Length: 150
Image (cartoon, rainbow, N blue to C red):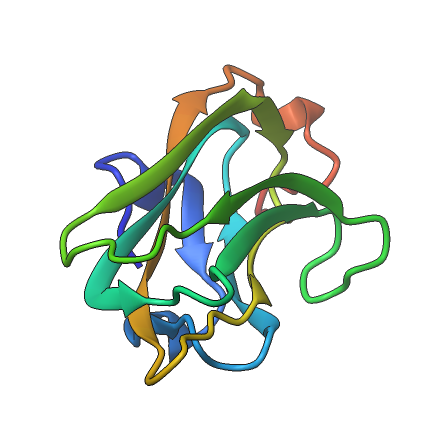
């Protein structure tokens, strides 16, 4: 997972699987997610290519979802989908600017591989999910999932 300099103040990893690149030719599935710890807005979705993409038959796609409850797709909201172009070189950052999506503490930013890429010969491609954050200056006392310790 790649994050901007502020992400670690706003999100924490849900599991260790994010330490391996998403294989764009694997079956469509939920890859992983990040748990929000401080009110913020996500305004840009990104995918950083780490293995050259060869998917000329069907282009791979990944999506980002806001989940009100960690590890539950109930009431999740699609924030955006990125289609990863064929022949994207290592280091390419595919991005999409979105209307900012508000996150409250305890919600999840879910990363999902929605379309497996295929190629006429040998499909390839991998990378990491990333995103950009804006601060949402909300007081912790106004957040229902934040409880002050005694």
